[in-house]
Amino acid sequence: MNNIITSLEFTPSSIRLVTGYVFQEKVFVLEAMESEPLLFDTNGFPEKKTTEDTLRSMLAKVRTSLKRELGNFVVLLPPDEFTVREGVDTTVTVNDNISQKDYLNCISMINKHVKIENAAIIYDDPISFTCDSTGQSKDFPLGKRSENLSVRADAHMISRVTFDYYRQILKDVGILPYLNLISPFASSTFLCAFKAPLAFFSLEVEKDYTYISLTKDKRMLFSRQLPFGLTHAYEKAGRKLNVSLERMIELASLFGLREDAGFPYFSDEKLQLSDISSALKESFLYFESLKSELDQVDPNCLIPVIFTGSGSRIDSLDSYLGSIFSRQILSFSPKVIGARNESYIPCLGGIRITSNTYMNPLKENERKEQSNDFALSSFSRD
Image 1: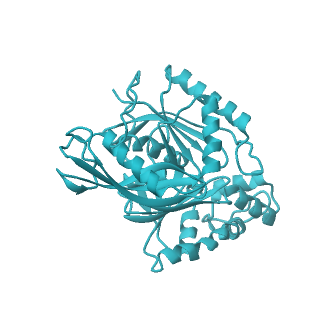
Image 2: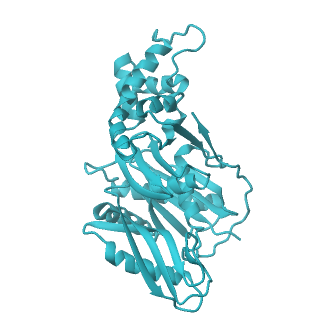
């Protein structure tokens, strides 16, 4: 019997929910959904009451569909003022054999040393473990005989104000999370499970926002949100072409950035593909401002960019971004039945993280049927 996990992502525009479980290191999905756009206040926080009502409605639909209560929640939050601080500490083991309790004792001591004022530590990502039996290892030595356990870990932190705001929403809805993560780290974890490069930038382009992050040796080194998404690009392109936002979205979905259909083409507005492509390319030049930032980290342009999110479905946008960044662009497809949409990658990663052996044991819960709907996810290289 596998434990059911519900992964909730609070994005800068909506709530995403994926319920599933991990079996033989693969994620199986039972339910996946995304809310309608939320209302946000002037500080960028979702309006509290409507957000709570939306979340309650989504959870009710899942409970009805699965005919069961939901017990284990992973909550994914935006990387607001994301900070990483590395720490290391050692504890005397509670018993002769190493357990998750020993790991938690180490993490508790690490967090006391690395904490920062006005920042909330939401997750500790272990880098290595050291014990008498195995020495230093990347694998948690669960059950090994040892008098001591040392843990080296990255403490992930975000704005205390942001964390407390979302925590209150969850409390009001009656959710006590099993785990909190930042969304890009959950994405990175899922990508790393499919032989991602040892170092990569991830660019997640969604409707109203973009996340840019750097992962190296499976450690997230930085992550931040950009105030730009597909809607901003479509609005700018629509103004240039004198078409409505709705029509611009339709044209972008149909043709993307392609310049040639192989035959003469004119839209109802007498626009050629070259006109549509040119307007969209001009709109996406926003990402030129990122090039210097990426080049400072990697001046030789050897680290590729993994392109995910709704933007990755726009035809030819990946190759265009490759030309802007002068870097290899990798597209990733999560071929998980029930959650093939690239926007669900963070939620899938959140579910996968719960299977790590250093985590506290999950609460047992029942599952009526075992789905067998997983196909290997894959990268494509452009």
